[in-house]
Image (cartoon, rainbow, N blue to C red; front, side):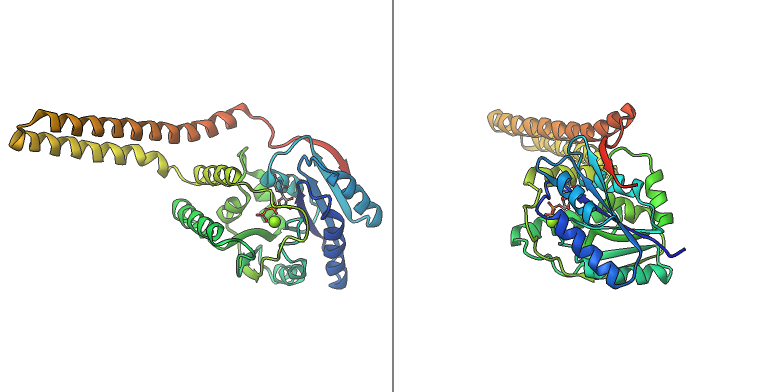
Length: 305
Ligand code: UDP
Ligand code: MG
């Protein structure tokens, strides 16, 4: 039997994009002679994304669809798509065509050569502003260091062997971070460079708040190092206290100056302590959510076998 490629496409409020994305991806794969299925995951969209998926399926029976009961976030949508994919290999790409479908045949050819994780890496960051570029650059520098994974240029545009997909699906964590987990699982990997295209229609779903949340959940998924902030602060304030004690014994004359100094140091110490408690809270939150054992997502509708 000819090999099958599944393409997983998460879609949140993408009614303007679904049909054109389906048509363009299918055209590229048909031209390259690759047997395929397209799996759109409607991530609880508030617009008519689901209707657009049904229309795309009417036109092309290789289109399948899954719809969430509410918005669960892109990473969970990707995992839902992976769980439905029947392919010998599975590609993941955005619905807004910022990941060029024209790269898929090249990625597929590398998979045929034996690579198990073909990663799309960004050549440039497209239309993002200087500030966004700086934030993203810093974010990936920090998380790469914390998680000991090089994720600076990585994207969610990937093509994976069935083995890698099954490994991802077997991971037990509730809060999935696709980009980090694909790096974590290893396998024989290679890269394909692509230029980030401009979004063809609709809007980016990322607000500063959602990016911050994403950053926190990805760091806490891969590193326990931030919890050691408490140790660092403890040592720093310990040294400071001893040094101040010695200084007071040696030069202490005017008590009001010392009062101000110890007052400020005390408030700073409390602030650091609260910060550490907050950091611990994030980790505790992860443990708590995991212990509840709730599903990663809830599917309300599906179309296509
Ligand atoms: N997406 C999703 N759920 C969300 C947010 C986004 O499935 O909660 C999808 C979105 O439809 C698109 C992809 O994830 O296919 C990337 O989203 P977006 O273009 O908004 O992100 P950006 O390209 O700006 O990073
Ligand atoms: Mg986009």
